[in-house]
Amino acid sequence: MTVTWKTELRFWLIAFAVFFAAIYLLRGILLPFVAGMAVAYLLDPVCDWLEGKGLSRALATTLLTLVFLLLAVGGVLLLVPLIVGQLTGLIAQVPGYIKSLVAQLQQLLQVIETRFDPELLAQIQGALAGLGKKLVEWSTAALVGLASRGAAFANLLSLVVITPVVTFYLLRDWDRIVERVDSWLPKHMAGEIREQIGNVDRMLAGFVRGQSSVCLILGVFYALALTLAGLDFGLLIGMVAGVLTFIPFVGSAVGLVASVGMALVQFDDWLRIGIVAAIFVVGQVLEGNFLTPKLVGDRVGLHPVWVIFALLAGGFLFGFVGVLLAVPVAAVIGVLIRFMLSRYLDSVYYLGTASSTPPAESAAADDAEA
Image (cartoon, rainbow, N blue to C red; front, side, top):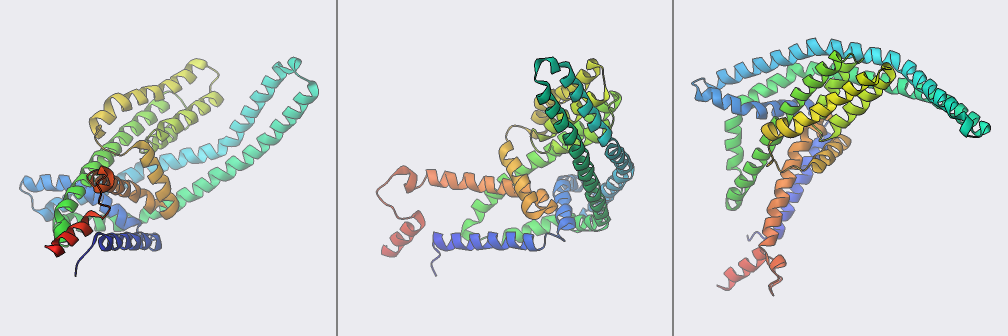
């Protein structure tokens, strides 16, 4: 049976459709398995290094899994009470912050009331009062909802029992799994598939491992700096900004707006407000000139807009599992697009030859005539 390019394309499209359909249908139970696979992928180079130092694969896997489990549990025990405490305090104080902001706006209107029609100013003040009440109700409901979702997410921490188990077995058998999957590759395409998988691996290693390090460093820097600057809830804002740094430009923007807004409500001194803003300027300088070039590099190949789109699309379609899978899937799609583009640039469709027959069918026809 002759396999044409149309048959191969149909096969791979069906395979991808089945893959995404399975993820969508099983998204409610996939979290510990996807998380375990991600951790195993991140730790595999360290496990290979320990093997090179003379440890057995099983012993290296056990040590790494225990270290990961201790760090995860320690982080939860240390950080979750602090974050929950700050989040609870923020929920309690948001109505007061909004009332203070509305009062400041009303004072500003009183200063300029001589320049405008008194009736118009009265309408604006009434609108601001109504807006203040709406903002208090909306923000309180939103933060309470966020807290409830956070509690629901905290319940998922029970999966810490499952994720290390998945991590251990995947990490222990990683090389055998890769070898087995490699043996399933189509013989006539194995070389090209291996080359593209290598490109995906280099891209993911450069982005995920590097960007995770950048997020950790910036999160610690923002949290400590904002806390030392005396900003209320500086620890919470700094950590959120650090985590969101994984999404290009979003972490710094959210952190800057939240921290400066909090500083405007909390401080009357413009110097302290400037210090809070300067912390994020310093963070951006560190990220752009030192952290990202050293830890991520400039050859990752994932455009920031593509990463943002992938994360939003993954979260919308598959929830938190989709967020975890977004960057790997974006890397695979990016590599496939580059591969197809290179094939197109070498094909008759781009070069403009007289033949309009697809290369695979043309080659098959030539062989049949021979």
